[in-house]
Image 1 (cartoon, rainbow, N blue to C red):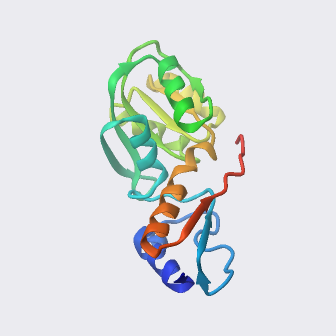
Image 2 (tube, rainbow, N blue to C red):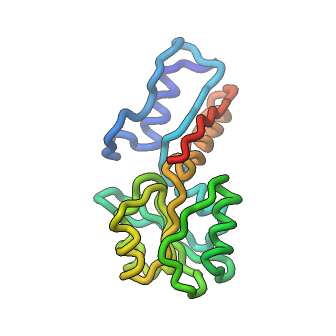
Length: 195
């Protein structure tokens, strides 16, 4: 058992929650009891250590992963190199295996993909930033009408993986960390959403 207030304070300190602007409520959503034995987590959360992007990079086997500022938030846009160059179809297959969601591939330029950029969730607006970093391809969780044209014009293959699919890992990693840190039972509940 652990005190709820201790868990909330630990999460807020670890994730620097107050420093990250968002359009929706974050943090503790259902208060429950003051003493906690079991922690239930679900989408969405993101941070460099426990975050969606760190986990996507790790699970895709990206080498030399780095996080840079995007949209006014430090460490939001990630990029690195694939262990071996892949075609868009082969990379889409790998993404499908990792995220359990087949990505929509936009603007396959037919060139090998080596430098890869990504940002989970609604980050299609960082495509030009990924291009400036020299990325051959970029993945995010959402797509806009302009994304297709932008990907074509920038020469960057775009992978639309689904917002929910791209944001499962961070909250799972955070839940596992909290379970270890506070000796809790952790259960991740995944209510699938194709968006």
